[in-house]
Image 1: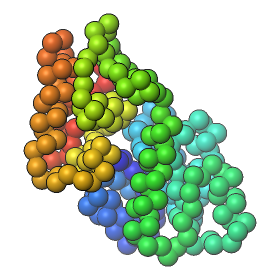
Image 2 (image 1 turned 90 degrees about the vertical axis):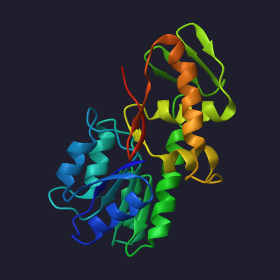
Image 3 (image 1 turned 135 degrees about the horizontal axis):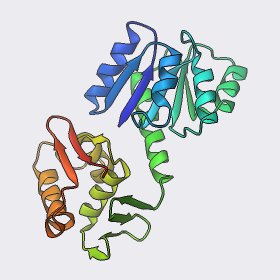
Length: 225
């Protein structure tokens, strides 16, 4: 998962970056609302979730959220705030936030809420995913390159669907195991590499293409044409 953190607390911001990195996620930290707004606009780096502190310099988190929604940005937003009144929660949710967590918070709960937001957004992804002439139909569970159908196993299809749904972004091994195996398999094993080798042999080798890039120490990425 790729997360943008907007937090001006000099201790909390780096702590969150470290916690997310330990989860196998990629985190970018900004310290003011204007920077968060500009980073999250269409055309910039695609994020899986935005974590916005309410009380930010230059532009409040709730204002950032509202303006992003007005600009058509649908990235899930979780608001962090010390403001715990019901009216404040209503204002944040009405501004377009997907979730709300008051300070102080438990780090485990924050991670769980971000995972839930990510799962929800993935379920709402379009059923037919395309990268160039590679077509992955998540509803019919079929894949094809041009007019040529590609026969994938259940695991192979699930891995490819996650990577194609996140085309242009690095998906970590941790995230792939969490999404495809639900944490059941030892991530130190070579099972992921075996499945990816089989996927490449089916979707690329016969067509002279190279779709999945291994990013050393980070994960895997489907490159946009």
